Image (tube, rainbow, N blue to C red; front, side, top):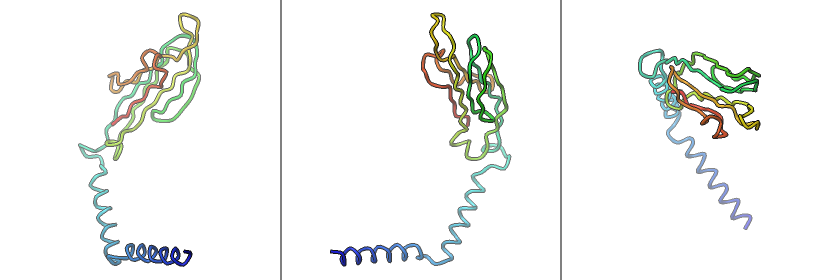
Length: 149
């Protein structure tokens, strides 16, 4: 049984090595060259279409008092803030971010509701003045997030 397993392993290894080296050295160089060409044609260099696009992104947290907020906008940061709170930044989307997106997140801390109970603060994300995400006035229990493309 052991000899049979060893023989199968040797055959599989030989097949893998043959498959990796088939096509010769020029095939590998050609594919690397075509990958580089494809990459340069896909990634923008400031032209229209897939070029750099800058958006004004505003994060808002509503409520009263103080709370913690954690966000990923142009930087990742967590801080204690007085409510209502707002932060605006210019975010530039480049290259592959046009397809996969640049994730903007806002995690609001807790605030005291009208009933005296703590609940998630209300959060909103706006892009170029248009509301694109919210946490349903704190009712969803989820952070606000949006993929900027």
